[in-house]
Length: 166
Image 1 (spheres, rainbow, N blue to C red):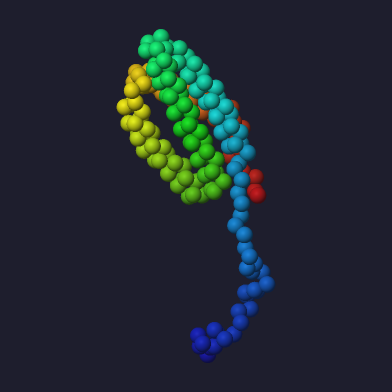
Image 2: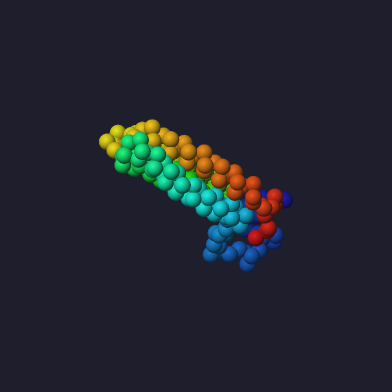
């Protein structure tokens, strides 16, 4: 009869130490090419839309409240563009990690964005140059346009259901 002590002294025939690599490197993942194309198109469309909202909103804001209105529209367009870029960046970074890390990065980025956005709005609306109605209108127009740009980019994407094995 073999005791546990005897088994501990005998080498395991099924385990081959030559197959173990002591300097094992982590696998470097790349974002799926289809996702990168969607994010790039979405950012390009959102940037063009933010510029359009800044110009049109600036003209409307200037006609309502002078330069303060134009500056308020510009601030609203820039805020929307920055937060859309953060979303795209978190999706890109999360896709490079994969698995539960993807969900953690995207959800964490979303929660941080909401908290920062509320804080920035609290600070920005107290600034003396801000016309709240123009700021609100430009943010709403830019956010709705950004959603349309994201939807358009996603519908035009040709992303396979299964990625190529790496």
